[in-house]
Image 1 (spheres, one colour):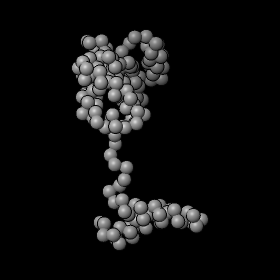
Image 2: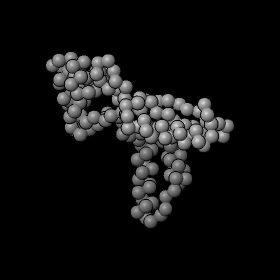
Image 3: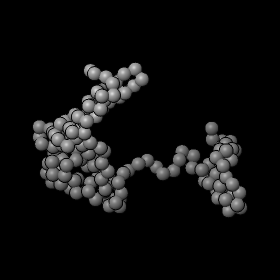
Image 4: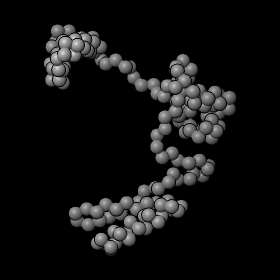
Length: 160
């Protein structure tokens, strides 16, 4: 492969020209101290045999959308729901398992993450109250002060 500024400029120009057309690969140029190399990666999602497009990014779906997909999947099948709504079949299976949570939450909810409280809730409450009191008194609260108070409360409560 030719090296030097002229070769890099030619490769950059070919990259710019190929972006507007249907080429499936983009050349990425990594100019290192010792030389340069090219790496190819997909520019657009790859067309599959069944005419569905491979997703490029992870998507977040609302609970209302998930409910529609689950209801459609229960009427027909997971594969039909995938084709109808454009989501992966694995998501449809997971959402069918989460059916009770999906229909029992707000329609705008996006995910079901873990608990919103920490492992040592009592320690966090005492430290949060301490921080509120200090701020109300006009005192500055640094991370070192918070950590020292948390250690003190944890030792007092017997948390290791």
